[in-house]
Image 1: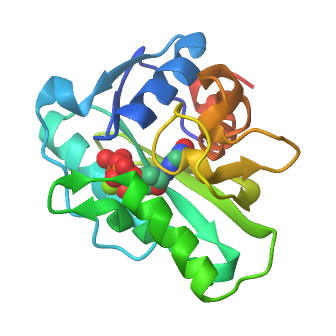
Image 2: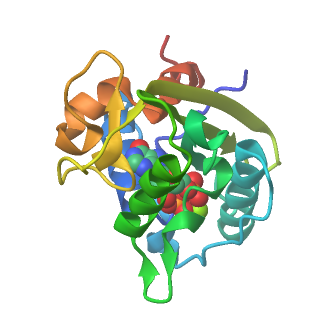
Image 3: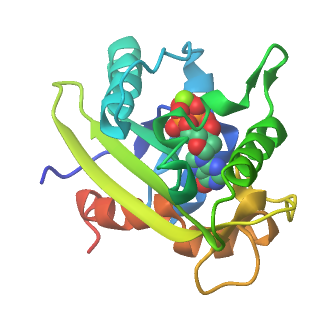
Amino acid sequence: MRRFEGSELLIATHNRGKLDEFQALLGPLGITCRSNEDFGLPEPEETEESFVGNARIKARAAVGATGLPALADDSGIEIDGLDGAPGVHTADWAETPQGRDFTVAMTRAWSELEARDAPEPRTARFRATLLLMWPDGHEEVFEGAVAGRVVWPMRGTLGHGYDPIFLPDGHDRTFGEMSAEEKNRLSHRAVALRKMAACFGRP
Ligand SMILES: O=c1nc[nH]c2c1ncn2[C@H]1C[C@H](O)[C@@H](COP(=O)(O)OP(=O)(O)OP(=O)(O)O)O1
Ligand SMILES: [Mg+2]
């Protein structure tokens, strides 16, 4: 595994919620996050059918444009009653002519479960694939997942994306009802980042 020796890392995401989480998780490791916004980078098209493929597209776009190492995150929710959908298409389900609307996405997920009369509990998991890419193209990949269930109606206004309908196993509040600190102890992103911590010289 290659060590990341820098103290600043470009986070190749256009999602503010993810960026905030990375800042909170990487700060204690002595890493300052730079964002896509600092460099005015366009959002690349995510044309792959795998999390790692799309993470690579995002990392390569950021590294190519800046010459700096970059960390990309491709993530999503897999709902068992929907045969794993929306999976890599999780963000697409939020697309509307006015931009992304996650209420639309969450409503679609629940209506499709209802239409299929899917059994309860409606088990699901969030997955995250993190890909750290250096300017010479070397990459390190780490994955994380958190199991839970989809609930309705939406609960909580914290977090981002599908957080208000995701109840992690062993908890009685959704991610939308958890503080950032609490979510960052158990999220798919935190699990993957703990594995990546070895790259930053931490066990
Ligand atoms: O912790 C999370 N809590 C709630 N929802 C989440 C989370 N993590 C991923 N998600 C959902 C929403 C996101 O839109 C989609 C991933 O799609 P994905 O393409 O990886 O991210 P994105 O388009 O929002 O930002 P970007 O690609 O610029 O990193 O899955
Ligand atoms: Mg995306």
